[in-house]
Length: 474
Image (cartoon, rainbow, N blue to C red):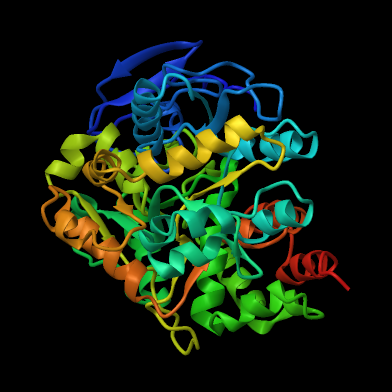
């Protein structure tokens, strides 16, 4: 994937928190003064661009390295996002120090561009040894093409590889009952974050229902604050809104029908109503002006929340770690609130259902050499989710997708957040994998493209449904 381009900035407008500003490829830090605007100021667009760009790496990165049988060195591609990059970097370094004859080269890429890059590499037979993914329909497409290894024999030799994981999480790495991917990170249900200070100043409470949410739009607009931040440039954050609304309105069965390619499944009334509600929110001014230019991969959407430019944000649980890293005082001063996505009055879905990423996963390339496979299995067995690995995830404010971590969570400085996430993930009646990963890659891409048009009010819900129905397999 291509590197993250530096954001051109000017016209810095106020906020109470310092943010990193990238301008003309030079990083500076600016202390911003309090008060807000509904437009995306340059500082916020660039805010929190603390992530390294595509091609950034740990100490053992080899630029352009790939898998295949031509090298004995195992290769690994990961995402340049907090906290996972730091956790993974340290873990690989630890492995390499202990196993100098079986090294791993790790390379990091910003999120959205990674997906087409890795699919291209896999198709060309030049995939990294370790293939980073989310499970679901994308994993199935790799399995159908014979591009990833069936891990059954390795798990039979090393049963602890399976036994360490929460069962519901582990199942997301299986296809037709066989394991092709193992969890490698943390559970990330999507939740609603809010700026407690802004809520206190406005004298309001977090929304419990969709009507509550809509009522808050006018409240915060009158306060000169955008009701919601969303990373529209990255597209996938918009999907969280559709996924949750469809679930709250119609229950998980609606998306199950889509996954099963049932005729006209995208025309389900719950889908149409969810899209309609999104456009009502857009037209009411629910999102910050210019949201289609806000990027999630550099955490600019999160900066809008902690700088006081937006009151709320719907995002993965991993956003907590990003905010904690970029604005530690905001978290330490208990200004960050979080709760479930609101219920929809009269909806059939359980308000405790969650959408998100049960975990991320490692698959092993079928084009890897025997030496690379041996290294990969050794790493997955002996290094990944070592005590140090688990502790570093928890320290960063994330919940490992493991059994028997409750005691560690209770001792964390992020105890309240961690236990909340564990409760959401472990007790949810249904934990739906993010739709863009649950669907086949072509369907997921079409969905994100058409959903962006919905948010821009350039397509009707019915037109969206027609376009997506055309992607269903006959």
